[in-house]
Image 1 (cartoon, protein in one colour):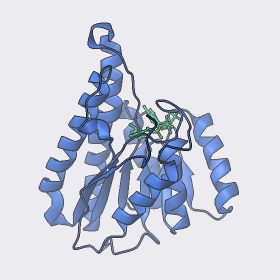
Image 2 (tube, helix red, strand yellow; image 1 turned 90 degrees about the vertical axis):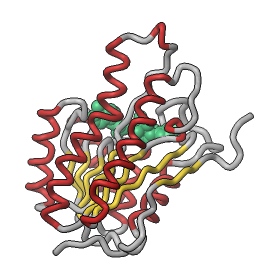
Image 3 (tube, rainbow, N blue to C red; image 1 turned 120 degrees about the vertical axis):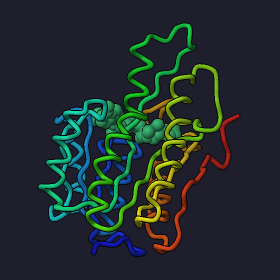
Length: 241
Ligand SMILES: NC(=O)c1ccc[n+]([C@@H]2O[C@H](COP(=O)([O-])OP(=O)(O)OC[C@H]3O[C@@H](n4cnc5c(N)ncnc54)[C@H](OP(=O)(O)O)[C@@H]3O)[C@@H](O)[C@H]2O)c1
């Protein structure tokens, strides 16, 4: 029976949105720790570019696979899991990282803006989690890590869709944890503040760096099986005034 012990070596993982930013750092960390990883982004060209960089960085033997999958499209997700099953044969870890922000006052937000944010940040996570849980149940264990946000607890003007998606994501994660914890399935929400990526305000030294978020994911995944870190907040030590 497969089990998540205190270690990542040999584990099989899916990371959504692994082409850049936080997801890309999480893919690198998992490969460095000896995992096998399948990741996605919206376009095959973006995925291929990231694959090339990762193989350069990690060596050509790195067990890393990628396929385009838009997490808002149910048919893409089914195709992606088929690809993942063929590449990895089983699954131990799902990192739901893909996310977008559209920041507008509600009166200026279109129904399409709202739909896109909720479909990416929340409904996509449901679809990925559901299909991962089927595989975790077969294995006898599993781990879901969601890259949530401090926007899951702190609202801000222009954040209605993003705040709603991340508040919803934390609620979803907590309930899913209660549903499945006795099946050796652990669930964690990592909630960063400002991270230095293209998302939001862009790159800056004062922000949390993507590799710092990956380090937290490593810590969470390497806890002894008896212990579940279910929520982590992280923020820049010295935010810009
Ligand atoms: N940066 C921050 O300050 C911050 C703070 C707190 C939480 N977060 C959260 O961290 C996560 C990652 O953000 P980031 O800062 O790393 O952003 P990023 O640099 O813009 O990267 C986003 C990743 O998600 C992928 N993605 C977006 N929409 C997708 C879709 N529909 N289907 C598949 N992949 C999709 C992108 O891939 P392609 O572009 O190749 O499609 C890319 O790999 C998000 O959930 C975000 O909410 C970020």
